[in-house]
Image 1 (cartoon, helix red, strand yellow):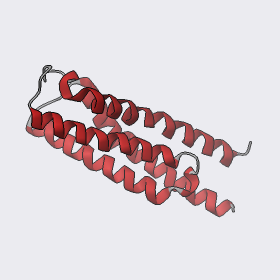
Image 2 (cartoon, rainbow, N blue to C red; image 1 turned 45 degrees about the vertical axis):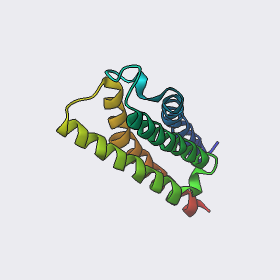
Image 3 (cartoon, rainbow, N blue to C red; image 1 turned 90 degrees about the vertical axis):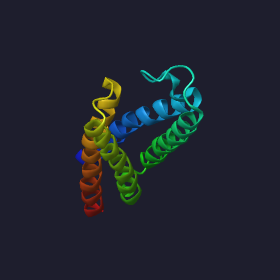
Image 4 (tube, rainbow, N blue to C red; image 1 turned 45 degrees about the horizontal axis):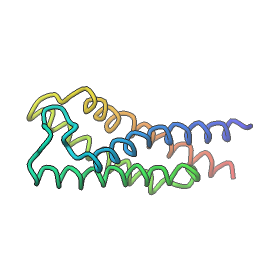
Length: 137
């Protein structure tokens, strides 16, 4: 396996593993609603439940959309950047909450690290790899 092929497989593997977070969390949140979150309780307000499940559905869809990039990661740049921008925008909103309201639970802090750390790095890696892949012909 050439260096480029090995890097492609590694990038695909890491992106696929990263997809587990929105797929599992988004799916669980659509099914369970916000009641599983720390401090919410078993019967959250109806509007909170509705909004939480809606946003969780979008999060689930983001995971599916990122997963659709994996098979042809080398040519998925525009989609990958759009999805990354969406995740980073959510991360900025979460960071705003951290400043305005305070630190959330550990899981949400890990999400913030994914949104403003891991995803931008993956986006840059994908773009760099795509340029090298195209140049190799």
